[in-house]
Length: 326
View: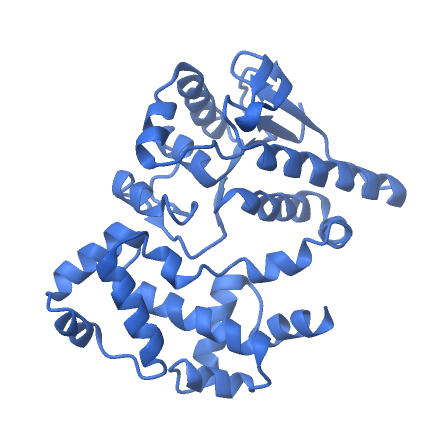
């Protein structure tokens, strides 16, 4: 049994596959030079054989192994290339995806872990393993996932969510964040940090926790207006009731628009805008953390530190130090 089983389907994003393979290969080399245990991995598909990735790139795979109790491998599922939610649903209904979904469900039921990024998170939803969990996916599909999975907390502002045996990540390049986390947990911080430095992934891992607020609007004109209003109002953001009144709608209607467009609540959207502004000030100014907190509407730095740590897993000072060092 391999440490990592990479599940490929027709149309899988090749970047997710190659990125995973490169990270694991770098980890194996790094481990060998240090005399440490190296991760093992394999490429699999529901039927085995040649799989056509997006863009005409092919990959040879083995047939998915049978599931046994006490599975210790991590099933990795990179995203599938789709252009909209309708195409995604049609793709999920295909035979190879249905077989993959059954395999995912059995893998988790038998004690295994599953990690998916981008559109592949919808395979996990179809497998029934997201219920009651906190998850993320690519920002433009998050509203559709929130609609389908009413029993799941979809947080599109996160690049990575870990909830029990289920790990989910955002857009395609978030596959690197998944892999670094898994390497750190299973093979130690030294190996993970070494791979991150060799492949120059450390800078991205610090910054990718933030999604540009305007992108979260997903084309909804009203939510776009709301995001711009909040951004221009900082640090003194009006109450949700006042914002709704300015847009000539009720708070409930505003909440419905925000939820449909972003998969989050109105307060969470406002918080993400504060976070985005704070990151910019920390990385592009010499303002103190206390001054940044005041600039985004917090009375003291404690609330900002809590917000940044929850979103990025680091302190505001660490975020700034990383940029200054590089």
